[in-house]
Image (tube, rainbow, N blue to C red; front, top):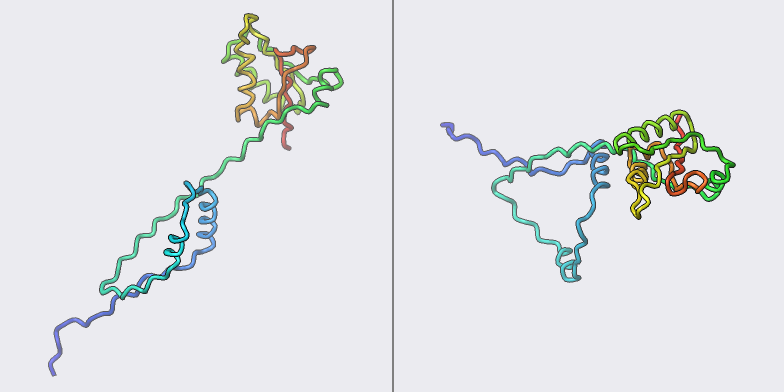
Length: 196
């Protein structure tokens, strides 16, 4: 008998199936899924919903296998920075104690006559030292500024600076001081306790 010189006919490879996700892949997927926000809600009519729900007949088997899509690795999850604590106003009781002298002001900083850059540096160093030293209430004197209807630059800037993330790690809250401590030209600042 003569053997045929044709190569044997091989069956096409089986179609790729979905595999189960490992625990690490599931955790990664859950992390990514929590960060996704929908762009907008789609309004689906009842007719469209019914059309989507219909089961399509199975497609005939393909003669040639369809190449599987390459698996693209998911990006590594971003490490989220801890949230910056929010500012909280001083309570009425705390403010009353400070204004009447029942609670002591632990330290004072006078920014009169300083440029914005110098005042910012001085305020930053002062607040960090107060936090490090475990102080509770400090007084920051900005001055009232010009008396021609326009308030001073530092009087406007210091509350904005204290609201920045660089200060919020050290500051619980702040409020305009009592007239006896400078009124509009000064701020009571409550310092956040240092974690041991």
